[in-house]
Image 1: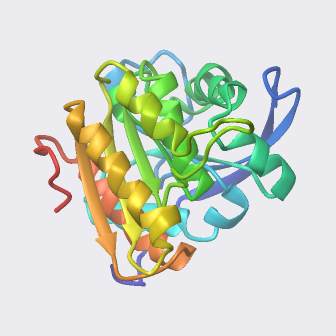
Image 2 (image 1 turned 180 degrees about the horizontal axis):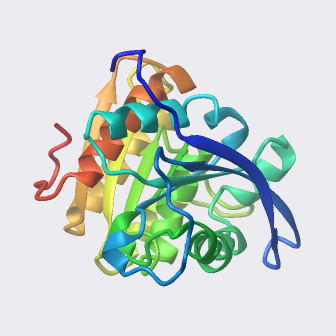
Length: 254
């Protein structure tokens, strides 16, 4: 992508109270150039696609720039993005790893809030949830738990080695996917070949295989890089374009 572009969307810092999390949750909301004042009376075709991203305290530095460029070049439609705050490490370790309350917060509080306040889509096929590391784990779990809200998932270096405390078997979410019925969800999964093979590369391959075996639409990519936001910036471009373009075939991330 070129580094120069002519116009920028707007980022607003705000918060929402979550009854599920029992606290206020800080948010960064991106609205594209030309964003219309919400009316909540628009037909679905006039509403904005929605991107939900975790780790907003860091992602706010580059997600808006990526969206500005992709939208300006016509590679994705204008969309709204909401980035959640997981800047406190202890809270992040509780909220992101397959936490049902956090998934309910996303689906039942955050997404309806964006629909009311930012004319975000009401359709799962126009809604993407995305994250990296524990956020990648959380994004797949959100798609599994709430496919009626999240019809698209981007997982970057997902921590699929994770298991709940006391569990005997690792890779808990992979086993949940294997046991679940086929989901009406599309996935983009990526991992870096310079990451740990046992903790990242091999589990991500097994997640890809588990999703593919269920007949899910999965774009999968392995890149020559490590566990960092620098690498994930390019992957976010690939994931957004893959999930936005219609007519993609299974296992085709190109």
